[in-house]
Length: 341
Image 1 (cartoon, rainbow, N blue to C red):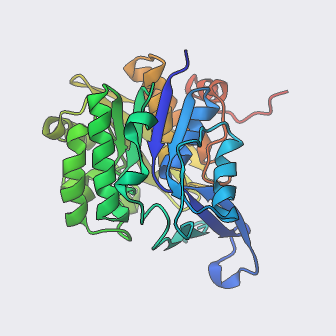
Image 2: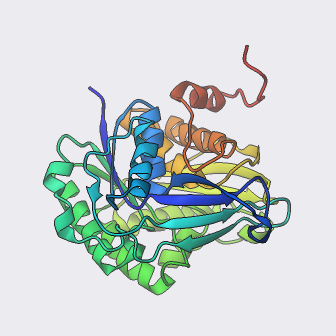
C-alpha cells in the first residue's frame, strides 16, 4: 500500500520575467505556481506516493488554476478549502553570475493567511496518513496560521504520524525573535528537522563555526555541532542540513548532512550550474521524506535527498519534475549529464 503524506501551506502564483530579464526590463511575465509545501507535495506524488496538499484558496479561476497545477502531477487536492479573496503572488527575478536572484512578495491578505482553525478538520485530513510536513514559512503568515499549524502538529502526534518541518526562515515575513518563539513551540512536536546553512542560526541562534555563506565557505564539520544541538534541544529523530557553497548565482557546490541516532552522514558533493534554484530546499525535503518512508538506510537517505535537489536546480519552475529512477541514477554516481538514447 502506498504511503500517504500530507503537506500544509501556501501555494502562490509565481510571476517571472523571461530568462534573465530584470523586473525593470520586463515587458511580460510567465505565470506558474509554487510554494514550499506544495513543491514537496508534487515531488512526493512524482515519486509515486499518495500525496495530499492542504491550503485555502479563493473560489475564483486563479485559485482553480493553482489547484489544477497540483492535480496535473497527481497531488490530492480534496482537502483544499475554498474561500477568501486572493491568491498570494511572488515575483522572481533570476540572478546571473554575481547578480543575485530577487523575490518580491505580494501575499498579504491571501486566503490562507486569513484562514481560521474551523477551516480544517485535521481528524479527516489525517485519515490514513503516515507523514505530515510543513515549513517555517507557513506559521510566519500570521498568529492565526501558527495556531493552526500547532493544532495540526498536536493531532499528527496523537495519531502517531511522523512530523517533519523545514525551518525555512524568511526575514521578509517575520523577525528572528518571533520565529524563534513560534518555531520553538512547534518543534516540540517535530520528528524530522530540515534546515539550510543559515536557518538554525537565524531561528534558534545555533551557528556553525568557521562558516561564511557569502564567501562560499562552508565548514561541513561545524554542522555536526549544529545538528546535535538541535536534536538535543528538541528531541528530533533526524536533523538534515543542506550545505550550499555559493560561488555565484549560477554556480554552487551542493551537499547535505544527516544526523540520526548519534551518527553523522555526509552526501557526496555536486558542482551545479543552476537553471532555477527556487524550490531547491523543498526538493531536498521531499527526497528525505520519500527515502525515509520507503526504508532506505541513513546514508542512502541523504544521498537520495541531495541528488533529488541537485536535479531540481536544472529544472524551470518551483516543482521538481523528476522520477525516482533519475534520482537514483545520479545518487549512484552518474553525474555526467550525457544524452540518454
